[in-house]
Length: 159
Image (cartoon, rainbow, N blue to C red; front, top):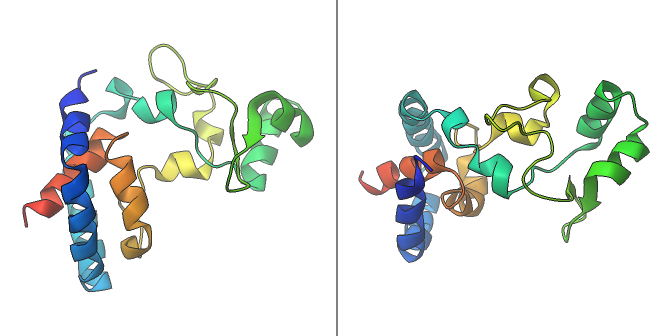
């Protein structure tokens, strides 16, 4: 994978990232959001998700009821049929995909349901949202899945 080096760096820095997470929690909320958002913009000018799609190949988004209904409609199914065919309930009681890679991912890394994809997919890796302090552990976990998240966190380390 083109971005494997970014994922390797995240794995190597796992312990340091935990310490960085503690530092981030001490950063004023608005300042932390601003830092993340600035780095998010810069990194996504360099990274092309279609060259990676590691998130789609290795993890599952959470499917909210509205996501299930929208996708079921797209496939002309009842929501319960969509759930039975594609989803399972995880340890947090959330609907997630039964298997990886995502069944909606094409070989060229494009998404067959892109216009109707779950909100969690639209927002991934969540590094441009407000109140980043609330998802620091998730963001650090995402560094091992998403090269962009890895680069953003590495940029935050170097401040």
